[in-house]
Each structure stands twice: as structure tokens, then as C-alpha cells.
Length: 302
Image 1 (cartoon, helix red, strand yellow):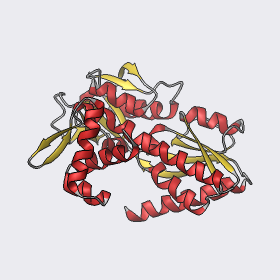
Image 2 (cartoon, rainbow, N blue to C red):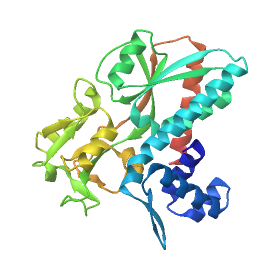
Image 3 (spheres, one colour):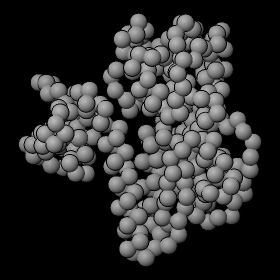
């Protein structure tokens, strides 16, 4: 297995078609097909089900997809860091990020910043919002991509970058799975999977408030820190969950994501860039500037 094969696997999973995947990869279709079969042979399992209309992921393929994306993401970080050192560029910026930032925001922000400021090495740390804010306050991180709203006070400056709202995640076998939307009150008797209040207090509090606005207090039977872990527990049939809507773009078919028809989510959630208040660090200011342009470009494109 090599990075080239992982990239081919991810592109084929995203396109669902060998011809379209080969076009995106700028290669012929037969070599792509051979490379995927070699990858499957090296793993000892099929990653795709081939049909006359295209391909779809097997259970093993769905399990491997997120890790493959992460491997490519971290490989790009390693490549860029090595090139920066080889060229004698100086400077470092320590940035924390929540796991869900890797779905869409981080892959846009990091290449844009590296392209404009190749001399600044980015040192990335994945963590929770609460831990990131604590490390920024202690001076252990320079900036962080955190979930908002933020419930704790502190010497922080927040720049909202990505706005989102909650969706209901239910198992594909659920009696609700055939619906496109749902009144949250319909889930009142279901077991809920939520973030723990100690680790992810902001999302947990907003989710609890939304349930209470629907007229019930959720029965929480499982807790998990990472959004993807919550989705996996839903997939396992252990309950339902309220998750950020962006999650629906990057998961498998064994979980259904339903829009909330009521109550309408009035409390927006999203990802913000957190920095120390009134910082005069030039590296941080440059990072904020790039992030602001990306957020503005996304808003104009919506």
C-alpha cells in the first residue's frame, strides 16, 4: 500500500465510477482498476462492490475511507514540513483543531496558508474545543479551530469561519430512516448519544437546549468526544444523536441524517478561529487574514 493507491481509493470512493475517477486523477482507467485490485489484494479484502452502473463501498471500504483521508492529509503535512526545512524557511505556528474541521475547513485553509506563507511551519494538534482554548490561554497554542458557541469566558478572540446547524443521525435500520426530515420530539423516547459535558460542553449544551425546546429531556445512554465516534455508535444501533450538518457529507450509508423540521435550530453552531485577545503575533495575524478570506469566499459562494 502506498499514498498513490490511497489517493486513488479516496477519489474512486468519492466519484463512485472508474471513468470519472480516472479523469480526476489524470490517468487511464485500466491502470486505475489494476491499482485498486492490488490495494484490495494487499489488504486481503474487497473495498468496492462493482456493478454495471459504477462502484459502491463495501463495509471494509467504508471503514477504511476516513483513515485514508487522514493519512493523505497528514502525509501532505509531513511533505510540506520537510520542504520548509530543506529550503531554510523559518517560523512556526501552533494550531489546534477539532476533528470535524478536517471534513472541509482545514483542507481549504492549510494549503492556502502554506501557499502564501511557505516560510511558516504549521504544527497542528487535534483536540477538543475546551482543551484548545485552555492551551491558547496558557500560551501552548497560538490559534485554534474550535466549535462555537463557546460557553466559557477567557481572553479569546473568535472569528466564525463555518456556520452549521444540527441534524438528527439515526441508524439506517431505524423506523425513521425513510424520512428526509423529522420533528425532534418524535425522538423523545429514543436513547441518545451525546458529547460529554466535561469535554465538549458547548455542543452538548446546545443539543440539550434544542431537545428541551422540543419538550423533552433526552435519555443519554452513551457519550463520545469525537463526532465520528458518535456517528459510529449510531451506526451500531446504540441510539440516535444530534450532530453538525457537515457530518452528513462525509459518512457511510448505514447512518441516515435528517433535517429538523421542528424546532427550527435557532442556535447556530459552527467552527471559529480562536486566538488570544489583541495578539500582536505576526504569524497569527497572517493566519487570521487567510482564514477570514476563505470564510468570506465560502459565504459569497453559498
